[in-house]
Length: 167
Image (cartoon, rainbow, N blue to C red; front, side):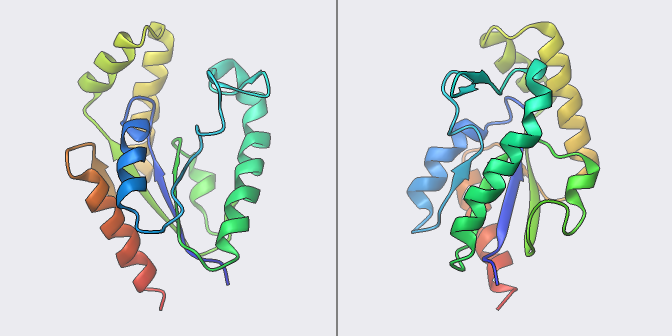
């Protein structure tokens, strides 16, 4: 049996990158991963992945991450994985990830998201897409963590609670 997978989805500028080091520090041995960790300046081996124009490449990138996560999970370890907002089909059991799978949303107010993205110099079209992604996440994922000071502790408590429920 695979260890449980805890997918913490977030639209751009929700705070995933900021949260990651806090999760790692407090994880007490859990293997915490972020789908952006393999990227270098938004690219993997020179292929731009983080750009919306790269959407045709995203399924391949997703399959690569599924394999990486499976290698850890097959040893029985729970894995928290920070990831982008899924589409509805990805939430269905057996869609991409071997069960058990738990989803949560990392969110922030849209005004804060827009402010962060403008500070990064993102084009307005990307900002509009990020706001739309956040709305999709809110519609699909009922478990929500707002990016606040103690979010790492709350996320790890969720992972621990869900992992214990499987025993």
